[in-house]
Amino acid sequence: MKKRLPKVVQVEDIKKLLSRPNRKCPTGLRNYCMMLLMYRAGLRVSEVVDLQCSQIEWKAEQVRVIGKGDKERLIPLEPWVIDALGSWKAVKPKSKHFFCTLDGKQLNRRYINAMLERASKKAGIERVNPHALRHTCATEMLGDGLNIRDVQQVLGHEHLNTTMIYTHVNPVELRGKIQARKSSI
Image 1 (cartoon, rainbow, N blue to C red):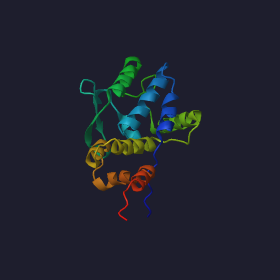
Image 2 (image 1 turned 135 degrees about the horizontal axis):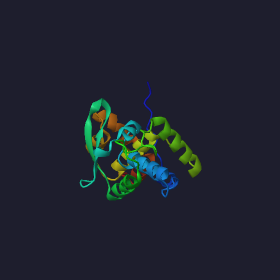
Image 3 (image 1 turned 30 degrees about the vertical axis):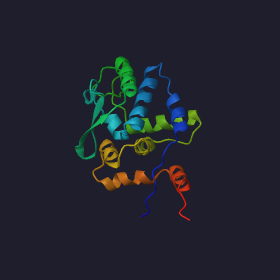
Image 4 (image 1 turned 30 degrees about the horizontal axis):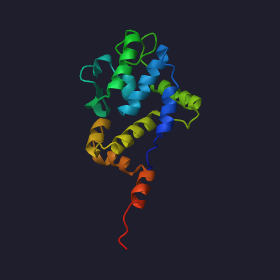
């Protein structure tokens, strides 16, 4: 079986995508925050829909994620992401689920996929799915200097080999490095 490289969303397209939700209305703010957690914290779509209010540790600026195999991990969040989540918390309906419908019910994966599809279309970019945001998070973390073990921890991969695919994603960066090599001839 052939292994495919993960699909990564370019920064310009991420900006367009994140600009689509109307953050002045509750559902737009909620959708923006869900996109942020997939993009900046690498959460899986299932982790987003299952996220409980109690899993966000506001003072520590981190989220406690229960991932595959019921494994728990802590993911530090950037202050601006915490601020966005706090804005949603201030207007969200009473519910144990952090991301919920306006009547407090749990969202489902299909909703998030459809929401991203609509936002991609409105942004005029190629369709973005939740896993592409996770891939983009991992790729950007490596590009920002986090090591492969850090990325493994954030993503909750049991095996380092699963995370290693992100070391092979950026052909533009590779081309620049190769072209910058000094000739020994």
